[in-house]
Image 1 (spheres, helix red, strand yellow):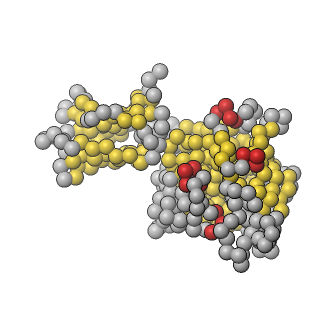
Image 2 (tube, rainbow, N blue to C red; image 1 turned 60 degrees about the vertical axis):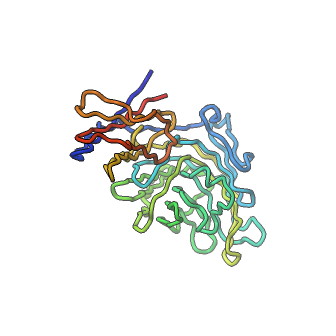
Amino acid sequence: MLKTFVSELAAASLFCCALPPAGAATIQEDFTTDPATRGWSAAGDAALFHWDATNQDLAVTWDSSQTNSFFYLPLHTALTRDDDFRLQFDLRLQDIAIGTTPGKDSTFEIALGLVNLAQATGPGYLRGTGTDSPNLVEWDYFPDSGFGATVSAVMISTTNVWAASFNSPVALSPDTTYHFDLNYSAATQTMQVAMNDGTTTLPLQPAVITDPFGDFAVDSLAVSSYSDTGQDPMFAGSVLAHGTVDNLVLDLPTPPIRRYVGALTNGVWTAQFTGWTGWRYTLEVSTDLQRWTPVGAAFDSTGGRQTISDLQPAANRAFYRLRADKL
């Protein structure tokens, strides 16, 4: 069935009218069946991730002595600081130890969150340096190395600027199921964080974006086991942990046209938007709001920020709209 969504902007008067949002999308993963059938994949050391068909969860080894490794699900769009989203999951640790790589005796994180997959799986992506892991939104846990165990929420921009909260001492006990809730509001530029141990919900310190920050672009949900390479030898840490992840829920912003803006500049009408892969987009123009004509050929979304222009706009009044059709 063809699904169509239209967002409109008028050029001459700069009057803007957009259709009401259609409601957020939600990804839910409870691992009752093989997640590979729903698009989940592994990158790096795939042996660190195992779907447990008996217990119906994801068994994870976080081992910083190995290469960067991810169990991930593509989102088919890029989330930015202008999008509302919410991530929830259950975590249960069997064991966790630090100083497991010789010469790296301090703490190191286990992680789950949102990554820019091409960058995270590319060369030179080093989580332990603090300056080489751009486009990241995630939950982290650092076991105690003398300064208190820490639960952290972090957002890292395209240019490696951080917005983070470090909650300490907050220790996670083995064989206890914890529920974590990370809720990001674009209106306040704030990531609210809460954890529940099965009996008590504990609000944690939020992570707040303050400028200059720039923006982030994350396109995959991932359970992340980072390599401990690249750290300052004076403060290097390492980790080895075993546990399970379950009941992942990710609420996403309204598809399929987001952050749509348009402007007439130097005689050229240009529209910018963020879309979803799996949708085809057409810029259309009208002089009477009755008859609409395509401007150029339809094009498929890249999942990121895109631009389309009318190089020869009408001499008088013209109205533009962006049409999205589900493939």
